[in-house]
Amino acid sequence: MSASDAGVPIVRFDQALLGDSLPTYLTRFVGRSAELSRLIELVGSARLVTICGIGGAGKSRLSVEFARLSGIDPRCRFSDGVVWVPLVAVTEPGDLPDALAAALGLREAAGGRPLVALQRSLADRHLLLVLNSCEQVASACGDLIDGLLRVCPQVSVLATSRRALGCDGEVVYDLPALGVGTDGPGDAVAMFIDRATVSSPSYALTEINFEAVHHICARLDGLPLAIELVASWIRVLSPRDLWQWLPRVRQCSAPTGLRSTTGTGAFARCSTARGPCLPRTIVESSAVLESFAAASIVRPPRPWWGRPWRRCRCCLTVH
Image (cartoon, rainbow, N blue to C red; front, top):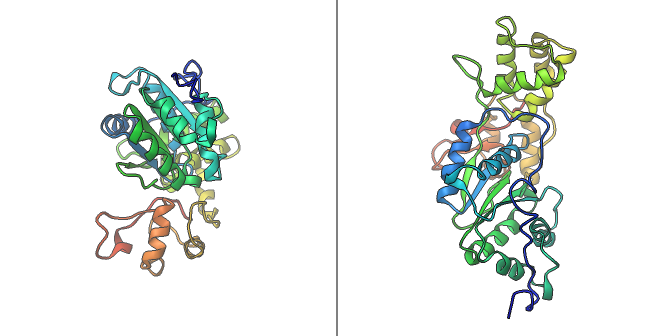
């Protein structure tokens, strides 16, 4: 009896091949060559890789570029293509299987067993699922991915999330900030220049404004979204004016992803702090540290021991 006779949906892979389901950006992808190379290594050795980082770190954009690269690089090529699964609008765990089925082009699962339908449809497929923005349903994503990978031996998953999914075999890749550069312009500076020229085509990096641009990118901790937003102001403010304006900007609201009111309150108290170090009175609390780490606000040392407040790296620009 065929899969269709059993009421199991069939994947229409003519609509799910690489290039058809991936989002299109109007701006140029800048830098991240080392990160792409690292992802190639990780995806080649692990079936579930999660790109973790705060909002605006560039997780989605990097995953799209990796998906495009997988279509031409033999080290990470999937014969059945790459399927982009957008989850930013999924807030209820029960909606997750339907979102994946829609991305795959599946018919409605029969018998109310969507996981079984997905498992049977993907059982003999060699493809990469890219699940974007998993943090709102992270636990459900972990359960669904675990159920798929155990039955579908040739399926791999690249996920983006503000926190790890907690699956067996998950490899978490903490996305670093864009490098500012020491001996010359780094990726952060290159992104600032690229986005500034989009906003003001006549703008160019010179020896005169390089120092200001470098300080702007350092002040923003190399966060791509922050750099893009600030660079758009180049139409009305010079780099030096932007540099002088930035210290007056404060981050006062807690990012989404904090799991407790304790963590949210602690972040509010941290919003008056400057620089990459969190106040010692805040991060001595293990509960707060765990909440901050889950939301990718801090990157704790590994292993976790000793005096964590001295060795936790803050991943979020707080001014």
